[in-house]
Amino acid sequence: MPEAQTIAAQQACMEPLQLAGLMIMENGGEIYRVEETVTRMGTAFGLSEIESFAVPSGLFISYRLSDGSTASSVKRVRRGSTNLTRVDEVNSVSREIEAGTLTMAQACERLRQIRDQRFPTALLPLAAGLCAGGFSLMFGGGLPEALAAFLLGTLVQAVTPLMARFHMHDMATILLGSMLTTLLPMIAQKLWPALLAEAVIAGALMPLLPGLAMTNAVQDTLRGDMVAGTSHGLQAILTAGLIAGGALVSAALFRALFGG
Image (tube, rainbow, N blue to C red; front, side, top):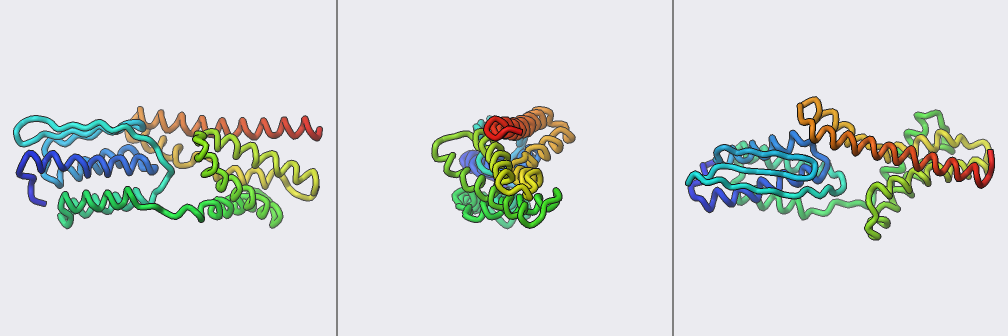
C-alpha cells in the first residue's frame, strides 16, 4: 500500500484504526489481538512509530506524522454482546490491508459496514437451549432432563433482551438466570419425583458460565498483559460467584417453601 503522503491523509488513518480496535474489544476479542491488529494496520498504511495500548476499558493509539508531530487517540470501551463473527470480519479486513488489496478509504468503509451490521438474534434462545440440553445429557440426565434443561436455557436467553430494555446490568441477568435454573427444576422434581433435578440444573447453568472471560484471562496473563488478565479473571470469578449465589438462594428458598 502506498505510503500516506499528506498530514491530512495520515490523520484520516486514525478512524479505521479506532474502528478495528474497538470492534474487536467490544465483541469478545483478546487484548493482544487488538494491539497487534492496530499496529499491523498502521504499518500497512505507511505510518511510523505506531503504538497501541489496550486495556479492557480503553484503547490508546498514537503515531508520528510526517511533520514530526504526534497524532493520538483515546477511546472508552463499552463492552457489548459477544460476537466472534464480527471479530473475524475485522481480522479479514486487517489481512486485506496488509496484502495491499484495500486502500485506507475502502478499509474505513468496510469497517463501518461491519460496525453497523445487525446480526440475527432470534436463534440465540434456541442455541442456548440446545447447549443446556446437551450438557444435561453429559451430566447423566435422560431425555426428560435434557428437555427440561432445553426449556430453561431457552427461557433464560429469551428473558435477557427483556431485562436489557429495563437497563438491567448483565450481572443481574446472570443472577436471575441462575436462580430460575435452580428453583424451577427443584419444584418440577417435587411434582415429578422421577426427574433428576441435578442434571437439569447443571445443564441449564452451563450457558451462563464465563468461559470466554476465563479463556481471555489465561491468554492475556500468559502473554504478559497482567492488567487485562487480572480484569478478565476478576470478571470470570465475579460471574461464577453470582451463579453460585443465585443457586444457593434458590435452594434456600425451596427448602423454606417445601422443606427438606
